[in-house]
Image (cartoon, rainbow, N blue to C red):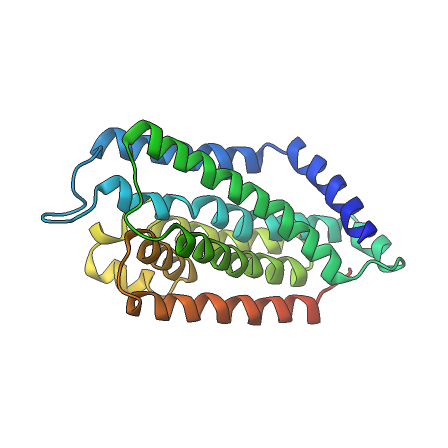
Amino acid sequence: MRAFSTMLRIESKLSLRDMNMPIFALAMPVVVMVVIGAVFGQQPAYDGAPYSFVAQSFPAVSTIAIIAGGVMGLPMLIAEYRHRKVLKRYQVTPVTPGLILGVQLVVYSVYAVVSLGLVYAVAALGFGYRSPGSWLGFLGGFALVTVAMFSIGLLVGGLAPNPKIAGVIASLLYFPMLLLSGSTLPYEVMPPMMRQVADFLPATQGVKLLKATSLGLPAADMLLPCLTMAGLAVICTVLAVRFFRWE
């Protein structure tokens, strides 16, 4: 426990020196929420919709920080540590792969939670957002999506031999998820063919889960996304720890 708290304190300080996460995980979701609210305001999400465009967009925008941290930030950081021989030095200490990955998971989770609070503040105070669904269900779904998406980053970072390969893999995952999952461009306005492609992305299922909980949609709408997120989290985490590369 002492090793975990020490590493967590050090990694937290290091992350604040790098402006990538403050920009992409904190500033970017707020900007997207402001733009959506300013353009659409309290307009219905579609003709006859019982909720506004802002209410539909809030859960989707909330995933931007999760995607940024889990799919781009985590893999690049772990691969960079491997490249600089930081992990090799850890190898001769009692530090385990689970401890290293767990610390990073907590650091990036904090960014996701802070981002959620900022996006909610903008939506609620600026555009009158009120969740028509269950906050308890939404927060549970948010935690599940966070763990699932971060597990992808842990797997890529745990296996990528160097930052270059990690960057290529992370980019191939990050940009399609950011653009097609519904976190930035609303899923509902995509052409049918684009939606079919988006449905294969893990982040899309995460956005669907958060929308279902926050909008109070039927439980049946949550089943597939829930199973997808849970299965992804278990498989990727186990593989990340099992095949973790020190160098």
